[in-house]
Amino acid sequence: MSAQLFWDIGQQAWWSLWDRKLRTFLCVAGIAIGITAVTLIGVITQGGKQVIFAELQTFGLRTVWIVRDPRLVDPYRVKRTGTGIDNGDLIALRESGCCTAFTRLTPLMYDRPSAQTPIMARAGRRYSSNVQLEGVGTDYLAINNDTIVGGRGFDALDIRQARHVAIIGEKLRKDLFDAQENPVGREIRLNGEGYTVIGVLAAKNRSTLASIGSTGGQDANNRILVPYRRIQVLRNTNQIDVLQAEVSVGVSAKASVEQAAQFLRQRHRDAYQYYTETTEQHVQTAQNILGSVSTIGIVAASVSLFVAALGILNIMSTSVLERTREIGVRKALGGTESEILLQFLLEAGLISLAGGVIGLAVGGAVSLAMARLTGFPLMPSTALIVLSLVVAISVGLLSGIYPAWRAARLRPVEALRYE
Image 1 (cartoon, rainbow, N blue to C red):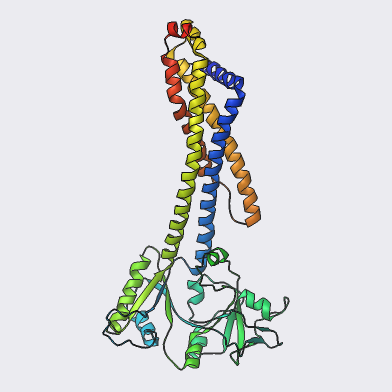
Image 2: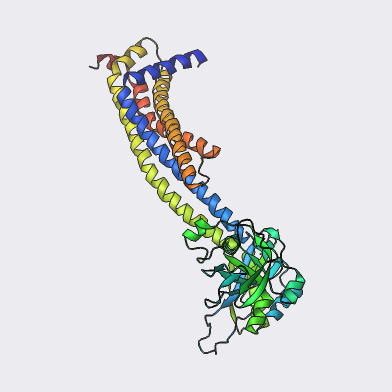
């Protein structure tokens, strides 16, 4: 088929749709609504994944945790006290060679400042609401992707000597010090003891995770970090609440942390059981939730596309009946089945293409408005745009196949007799 003939058939398809503007508009609107819904669902899903992935990065994507599981496997065994992890375990994990996949390892000690002796800056400004006190090691900042924006992190001497030094979060800095005041080198009072601020953490955003309860209600910017040995001295203990580690790339985080937990069980002769957790688990959970929401949305959008497809099928079938004599005349004058088939398929394709373009435009505009309101990355990707157009055109062509086939198969004599 020559390009000129294809162009002529395309023009005929266009003018045929133009002559039936109302029905054409309704079909285009149906496709546009369905594609708009599909676009918005895709944009929200992609944007949600980006936001959650970015916030999970603030925990470290290769991070694992080990903590004692308080549940008793054997109901007849006497329950042991303590955390099940101590300084000896930390040294053994580092030196035994059992967990070579761990690139970094830090103990964690959790506490809260006393309500009777709230955090206090030397100037007398106080803050005591929901502050998380964490005792950490030298690897903590690197594991958690924390950045120091002023001052320094902990060194080995700070930890070993249990020094009275602290690193504070951005929110705490704003609450305790003036905007132009440099907190590094200043003293804060914590549980009646003085601590010198040696660093300030860069702000972190975990608002989305917090909204779904995945941060334990703790504000990442409202932390005070001190050497873990400082908290052990205050408690008069050598125990550790949690072990946190970073696993090397290309190694299963789940398998590595389970290996470490098994090492601890053997070291304590099964006196304790351990619970393990990985960031990968949170990533997978978030993807499963977003995938389920996306599936529900796509099913709902598919209903509107199905209705639009029925509309195209109806208008094309009606068009075949209305143009039966026209088809008979064209066949009597030498028109081939392939040309007639192509014209009707082009009409269906033009309807769906127009609906797809309009739907993408509306979906993109709504996405842009939502992005400006929420600050989320809600813009359709190139892959989503191409997919939406392919879906729109496919719906139109599939809906138009049967009417086009009927038109192409009409016999000229019967068509000319049709009233």
